[in-house]
Image (cartoon, rainbow, N blue to C red):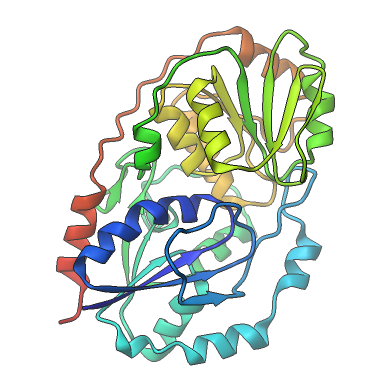
Length: 329
């Protein structure tokens, strides 16, 4: 059997989840990997057969998407060319993690494709989401269209939705509390964060930044370039995680029973939905309309947080069910 696994390369969550899923897919046949996008800091250890430009949302430095850079990075001619050149009929199973080139190629060629992603969960009307009019809704539904859907979310909101894929390296961590707070806010410049966190000098902050190439310390704030191993160590030993409205990062913090505070990116509908879902569980959120973050952060630091999430390790069973149900013989 030949399998194509197409992965979105914007952000680190898709790649992180893929690192867990790839070895499972390889058990069922010959696996080719496709990655499109340019914004991931985490890399795969397996060879990538198709490295495509795709469409990427470029992180800004002020809490949202940099629309100008995102627009400038788009190349419709290259997208169409890559789409036409994919030999999709060679595969018995095409698995898509919110990857647009292969998804649209399948749609145009009449080939069935199954989405295996967090975004697939939004095909259910039962998933929590704010009642707002947002162009991001259209992007979420049309960005990577597929016929079949297997989704992941913080809760089992529907029959095809599962709890998050927690990487083995996270499950195997020894969780303890050494008192510091871990921060990953990729859409905010580290200089802005340093200015904010030095106003709480009694707290130690370990910031992982997409915008700094070197590590440095300023007062009680330690800044590191994004590094998977260092981040995992920081997360395992922190008191809490302050991060954006992504999915995998918050899920891993909840699995490790860490305090969690999220600030979803402005103009990013999926992150707004994730934050809205977490808010339903009583977890704190800093929305884009909030001008003064300090009181919310101070309250989060000073008060305990109680939550209980159960994220069992079901990934192997999900992959097995998917292959048996959707693979073309």
